Length: 356
Ligand SMILES: NC(=O)c1ccc[n+]([C@@H]2O[C@H](COP(=O)([O-])OP(=O)(O)OC[C@H]3O[C@@H](n4cnc5c(N)ncnc54)[C@H](OP(=O)(O)O)[C@@H]3O)[C@@H](O)[C@H]2O)c1
Image 1 (cartoon, rainbow, N blue to C red):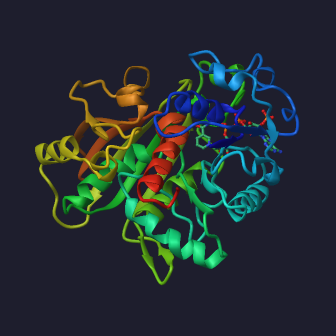
Image 2 (tube, protein in one colour; image 1 turned 180 degrees about the vertical axis):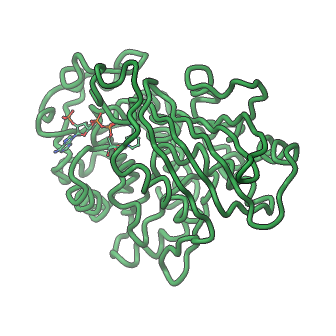
């Protein structure tokens, strides 16, 4: 297993989460030419941001150049991609890794709307992995594949809405206001002078992602490509707030026709389980949705780490004066929304034998 962008915020989270993984072992690390050639411990000296020290097994690994695909050859079969580069360069690079035979699992937005690339939340649209044989045929890959994660805040509201859809209650309109942590911008991100005592009501490109990506996730495969679900309309406001980790979403929902009772919604959320739970994937939370009953929860500091930081916490379900209901969703952006969510995708693809 290799991590490209290993020195960054998401890359470090991969290494932390994979250091004791029961199925996978990290054997290759890469980053920019600035870090290439250094031992990993030197490359991250002074900028290791995880709450636990650099795992021993990575300290002496020599960092490769993520831009040089051949360097990874023979060292791993899965590539987790978390590089920060121009979108077009990431697109080319990820295809080049897949062409070389790697299973590429990406956090980047570059390929989220590529027609035969699945954008997965494993509990929601696990059936979208059915595109992989079509993708392989299209590109002529045998072992290579490319699958991407959606934006880091999307699961906070898409998972609870999916659970309702699965129970027969179709949300057709949503207004989502996100309160996004500073770690979402990588390190060092916004300056402390900009963030302390402040809220920034703009995150470039984030509102479009929050509105459009769920339509692909709720979409279906037809004629070898994804057809987006245009029955759901979302209006998003995205804000950067002075929280370290954990993206919150304040959500108002409107149902297309029949509307569930409030206690029914709570029951649906509490009982919701999906394929990752049935397959007992190592990173799957036992309960993908945790319902909080306190009037002032979920809160980032108290709830982001629930169930390996992989669960979405929801609370404050109440009637809405404009739509039908309102609630607050919260999930850990660099774990569930990035590295942890991507590892869960790899586990699903491994369990389905797309990755050997
Ligand atoms: N932070 C989040 O919550 C989050 C969530 C979901 C998705 N993402 C996405 O994940 C990606 C990484 O985010 P991040 O927050 O981890 O960023 P970051 O902390 O800035 O780390 C960026 C990584 O990319 C490497 N890199 C930079 N320029 C490169 C180049 N020219 N060639 C190869 N590698 C290069 C860096 O290596 P050096 O250390 O050598 O410079 C570093 O390893 C971004 O696309 C981001 O949008 C982030």
